[in-house]
Length: 188
Ligand SMILES: [Zn+2]
Image (cartoon, rainbow, N blue to C red; front, side, top):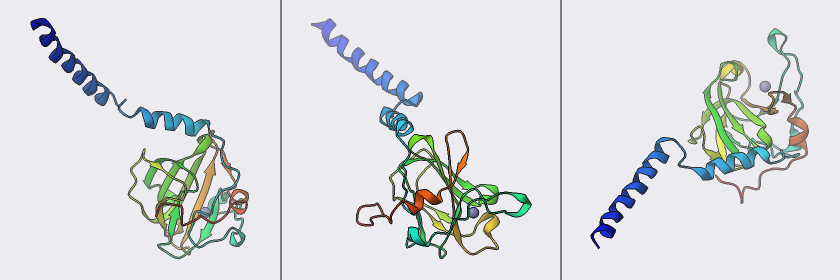
C-alpha cells in the first residue's frame, strides 16, 4: 500500500520533468514540425492568385528581366496599387522573414509548398504574424507601399518567387494562370 501511493507522485514528477524538458528543447510543437515537412514535400502550385486586392490577372504587366539601375535585372513582378491595399500570401506557408531589408524596404518572405520562397517587398506595413507562424493562402500579410528603393516610384508590390536553390523564377505566368482570391473563403 505505502509503496504504491509513494510511487504515484514520483511518476507524476517524472511526467512533469519530461514536459519541462520538451518545452526547454523546443520540441513542444510536433504538429508544426510535421506541417513543415509536409509543406516542403508538397508540389509548388502551377497557378497562383494575384497577391494584391482588386488587381485582375489580365491587368498584370510582365516586368520580369527589365533593366534596373546598376545593370540589375528585375527578378520579380511589380503590381501597381494604391498605398494601403491589402497584400495576401499567394500560398500557404511559414513566415520566414519580415522587416526592413535594404532595397526591398519593408519585406515579408513566406516559405511555401515545395520549399519555394515568396518575396513581398516595398510594403507600407506588415500584418501581425510572427516569424515562424503558419499562414493560409489568402491571409493578409501586409499592405502596399513604396518602402526601400521604391521611395521615388508609384506605390506597388514587388513580388518574387525563388526556387529552393535560390534561383528566381518569373511569377507572371503563375499569376496569369491564377484567379482572384475568393474573398468569401479567405481569412481577412
Ligand atoms: Zn520590382
